[in-house]
Amino acid sequence: MPIAKELRTDPALEAQVFWFKYRREIAVLLILAIVAIFAIAGYRFYRDRREATAATLFGAAKTPAAYEEVINRYGDTAAAAAAYLLLADGQRKQAKYTEANATLVKFLEKFPQHELASTARMAMAANLEAMGKQDEALATYQQIASANAESFNAPMALIEQVHILQEKNRIDDARRICETIMTQYRDSYAAMEAGQLLRTFLKSAKPQTSPIVAPPKLGSSASATGPPTMKVLPTAPPAPNSPSLTPAKPLPGPSAQP
Image (cartoon, rainbow, N blue to C red; front, side, top):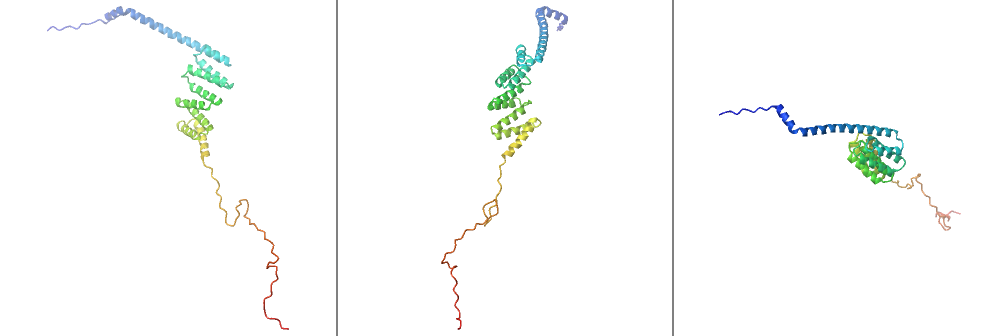
């Protein structure tokens, strides 16, 4: 039987055929790739220039109005994030706690993954405490400690919970949180403070023992201020016909001889 011979193909010829067949698509892809490269490079250049300009403006800002200018003009830059925090701090120092928390809320909305996001929440809780909203502050500290357990603010949020619970006279809950801090964050500064507070709680929990008073001895007075004394009752004077006032009669005996 005749054996069929293998058909050999030329790679160069195949490449020419492929190019001729898809030359338009390939040209479009190359143009798009070049445009994308230039666009990315241009965007990076624009971002760098924008960040540099915002940083320069932020460096010269010293007042709340200047911080607001940085935020309004360069709201998506790192300088704007820092301006939010400094603006909120200035509002807090002026006792404008509601305005400060509103500024921090905007910061968290624009920069939710910022490295100082938990610090902003700590500041919000402190402002709530300053306004007398202890329950809301406690809830905020609990959220920080549970959602950011690995952050450096977590043990501080727990210790702030202890202070609020102590003010509310919830000593058992405060003691449990102190034990949690000493177990999970034993190398932190909060653990040292938690240990001191825990010792205070344990001392206050000990019952106060009253001194044992020995029972009074028989014949002694019940007064503890001095030696026992005996009262002398006054006696009435003897009556006139009392036997003690009549002369004693002579005893009978032999009569005398005259």
